[in-house]
Length: 187
Image 1 (cartoon, rainbow, N blue to C red):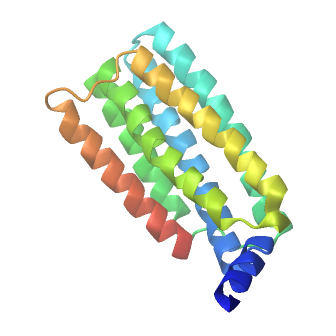
Image 2 (cartoon, rainbow, N blue to C red):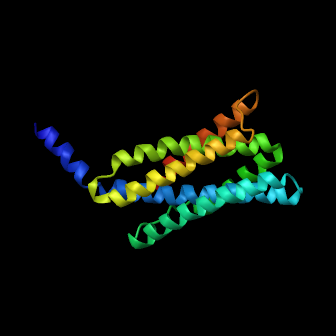
Image 3 (cartoon, rainbow, N blue to C red):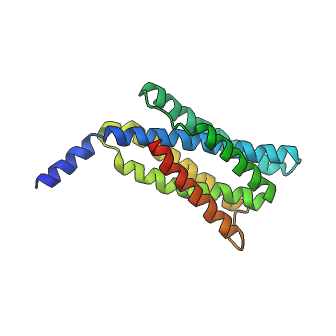
């Protein structure tokens, strides 16, 4: 019975360290998404490719900016240290975006789908870690999760595939995303 009472108390109030990790990693992740899209747009503009794809990427990037601004404000308001690896994630995000766009529309859209599939689970898990004291944050994460699911659907509707060698690319992107999440929560 004591264990049940403790569980209820944990759900009432969010663990401070967990809260800091959630905000830090979401801040880094949303910035990373912006950088991926910036890399894709750079490749598409440089090589004058697919105007329709550029438009879709610009629109998804705008959602990511909204998400990033929310977490950037939370970082400042709550006096949480952002991950020390932001400059590295920026470079890696732009590189991933540029590289996938250079491989073509299917690879660019797979990049979005793969990242969003990881983020879907990540955001879902976070909602279970937030207590009643963080209901506003939980609602934002749920809204942002839906935006990410919409991005995944857009990606599949526009050619994302895991067939053939794209299956390997999917695994590389997902594994890299999971590693970045784990590191950004802690550092």
